[in-house]
Length: 315
Image 1 (cartoon, rainbow, N blue to C red):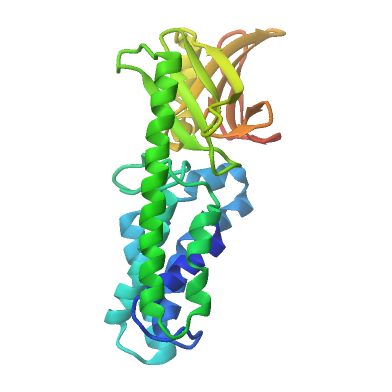
Image 2 (cartoon, rainbow, N blue to C red; image 1 turned 90 degrees about the vertical axis):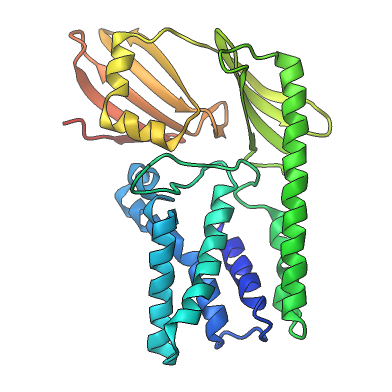
């Protein structure tokens, strides 16, 4: 979720105190800072895109990380305002928790149980910027007389919005199951995620026995666009070798929905993993490519976001 949404939801958390909105009110300071501080991990972008996907929404978005950040915010309140930190720890925790929940509800997900478990969990309900959710909290900025009632109405609206998004996803899943009739060992693996653009559009992945179908569904018209049929291949020794590398294990923690391809060109063997969650033009946003020589020894590996290729350390 974007920073502005996190901040305005943090204001909503602070407004539940019933106190007038003010930049000098320590409660609002605690909730807003608590709501945006988990994204401090974006500084890893200075080390490149690969470092960002490795660390973003990891430690600072876990339950333990949110608690530590909330304690740090309470400490800042103590230093700046000279107030007992305990009440403001809970207000900061409310803001930080709103951040974690919002990020959980989109498709990128968060590492809830880091460092004990590095799998990402995602609710797949909200876009990275949800205009409806953002607009629900605008009254918090302008209604100074009744902050508690305004915030309560905003959070009630959020609950209703999430319920309607959940119902929409259920109906979209029902439509896709009837259309494609997935037949796998797990009664058909189907995933639906909010599209990167269009609040009524859903990206989907349907896994069948011999292929994976990806596309975008318009909810109201039920039109399907950008549909691709990806033929599944048997796991080869090279694919298994690629999947055992550190970059591939990280990539598989980053996404549960990936597609593997293998091909040969000019005496080199290529293995590519593509994250099926996010589309970019006619391809996928995140990819990982391994290059092996004729002796099946790994020579190079590249992480790709859009068309930006980052060489990886394979030593």
